[in-house]
Length: 172
Image (tube, rainbow, N blue to C red):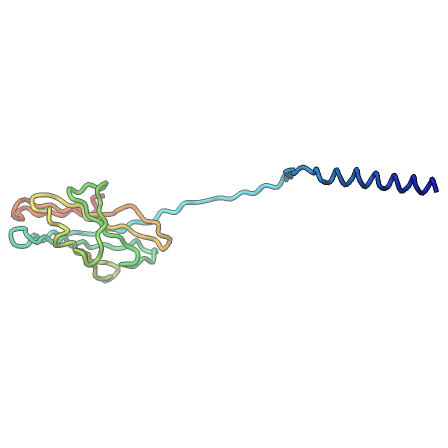
């Protein structure tokens, strides 16, 4: 009987010791290392900008209603179409850092393409300050991803009352 009592005492004692130890388990962070590596090559893409072919400034009577007509195209192979893949912009004084985005129907109309060439007219209040000054008229491609190209453009200028109208294509 002593032997059974001793065994029971040992089992009960071990249970108490093990049970009390389980209540004080500390959390740990597991860590491991692995010698496998991977390599990849990333390549950035450049969105091609529209190609401005020509521009013409028509001054109107006394230079009051100037219209700048720009002929342009997307680079071959892009699959871009207007208006989905183009932004329009204007800048008083032809300062590229001052470009304001213009919207179709608000002084901007585009037709075409005819043999790949679009015709865009910038007019009305959009060019109100052209009298005796200059404007930059800009286009840029917009990819389906939302990425945009650099601006392409033209510079239109005329003197007071519409004298000496000039338009230079591809000035950006």
